Length: 113
Image 1 (tube, rainbow, N blue to C red):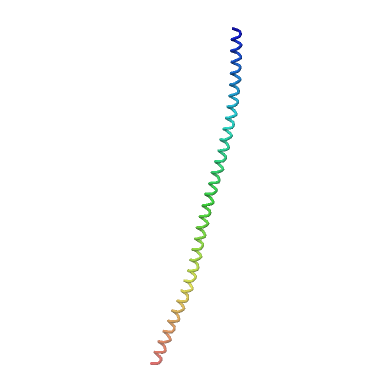
Image 2 (cartoon, rainbow, N blue to C red):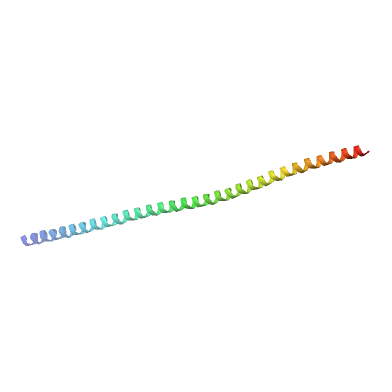
């Protein structure tokens, strides 16, 4: 009977030892898994930041392109406006010249009669 008790104690001790070994291995695996999760979280966050940066850059490029187009349109508008104003002045000058010539012609016609 004592022998059975000693064998039982030895088996129990061996089982506890194996259990502790399994628990230590489990702890190591959990630490490794947590480490991998943390690395994944950091990598995903970095990717999100990079994606946001790329989106912001795309928006800046689009805005810059639109501004260049607007600037070209403004330059064209200003050029056309200047040309119109020049033509308008020339037209007024021609109208005044024509009016003056008409008056001179009428005066000469009246005086020759």
